[in-house]
Amino acid sequence: MIKTIHTFKKTFKILIIFYAMKTMNAAVLEEYRRFKWKQVSQPEIADNEVLIKVAYAGICGSDQHIFKGEFHPRTKIPFIPGHEFAGVISATGPKVLKFHAGDHVAVDPIIWCGECPACLRHHYPACSSLKLLGVDVNGGFAEYINVPEHMLYSVDKSIPIYHAALVEILSIGFHACSRANVKKDDTVVIWGAGKVGQSILQAVRTKTANTVIMIDLLDKRLNLAKSHYSDIITINAGKENPVERVKEISGGKGVDIAFEAVGHHTDVKGVVNPVRGCIQSIRGAGTVCVLGLGDEPLPLLMKELIWKEAKIVASRVSHGEFAETIENLRKGTLKPDALVTDILNPEMIQNGFEMLENEPENHLKILLKFA
Ligand SMILES: [Zn+2]
Ligand SMILES: [Zn+2]
Image (cartoon, rainbow, N blue to C red; front, side, top):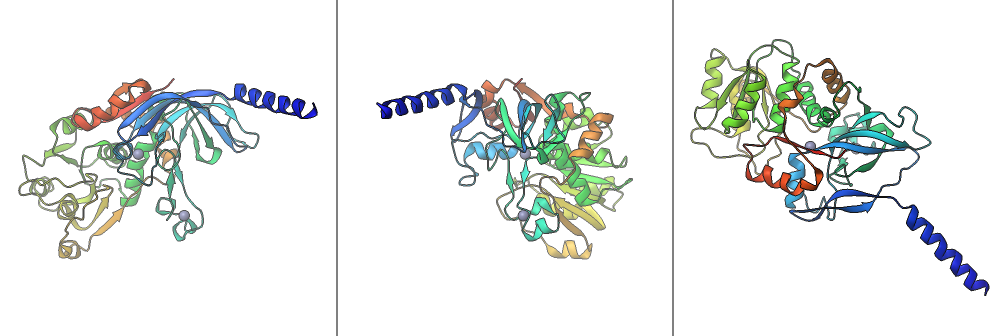
């Protein structure tokens, strides 16, 4: 009898837990190349975490790699991607000090170890075991997400919340500028007019009013950049030799800084690969900043670099530039709408990924609208 009562109590408890478990909708990558918008359990928050009701999330180039299974085994399925997102805090854990329910927040998705040589030098993007929310652990393509307080940045409510979802990608541009040390009056060339290249352009234009040149193979992307920044010079590398044109534009001297944001190499007759193109584009003692995550090795002629005693720096994710980006959004010195080509309901996520893959010239940043 006592045992029966015990079993009954236990079953009752399980039932209560079951009914108390809240659910939400999320875009789950159930198999590579196949998303399912489905009900999953809503995350619980730890004492130092907040629960964010996601408002908007952006689809990134890395998400496209995850989608195709190219990040396997780093990203395992089933999985909820999404590392570019913003939303409104709906609940806070008891140890959360600076944030409150109702606050608008952007999330810096990087998770560093704090112990490796780079972390000990406070150089977190180079952490030897760097993880990202939405790449290594479930991310923001969901109605709710739990995030520790230290990853949050407060976003002024005067900033449209869909712009806040662009803070991560725009911060990549600001980080690249700080890695390359872009100064007032510097002349700049950006190889690649995709999401990263256009984010660099936005950040660069807050630093220098001098010549900015953009290179790509797709006229539509160049025209998109030009329609928002009419003072830039664009070069289609399929129609003109970009290195020759950069020399011409800079009066034979070369530019101060070249950014490489192509990430892959397409053979174009008479044109060297983008990194070597950057080296050939700069003046003596100039700087090349590389961001493209290509998989294939690219041949460089080292004497071209040495003769110029040039510097190559790499730039990965961002490092504290969120505050600078949010401040620029608040001041209105950026053009976030220039990055956004589409806003979709999250049920349409599968279409979003297919649009990016099948028509890269027509789509740049696709935002998913959750709330
Ligand atoms: Zn990204
Ligand atoms: Zn580390």
